[in-house]
Image 1 (cartoon, rainbow, N blue to C red):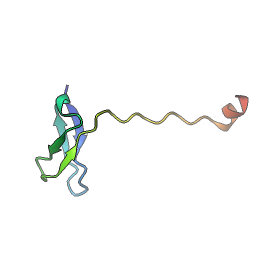
Image 2 (image 1 turned 90 degrees about the horizontal axis):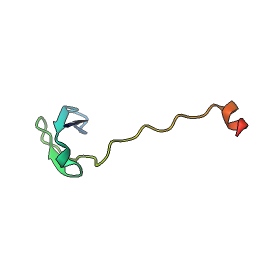
Image 3 (image 1 turned 60 degrees about the horizontal axis):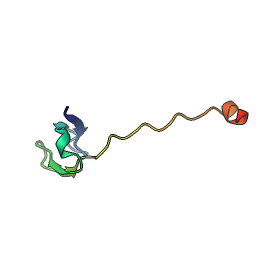
Image 4 (image 1 turned 135 degrees about the vertical axis):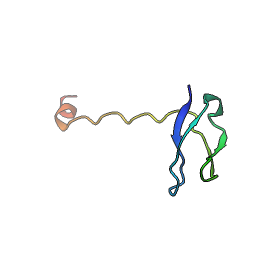
Length: 58
């Protein structure tokens, strides 16, 4: 299943699809030519913050 990422160059921001096999390797944006490293893992969403009332109960 391909990985969908966005070119990190602020002037470009092209959406790219790369194969799973390139995780941790350098790739080049076909639009602007910038090279960057594909993240090895997807970024996890931060855990939800607890409401102050819930924190007081603990």
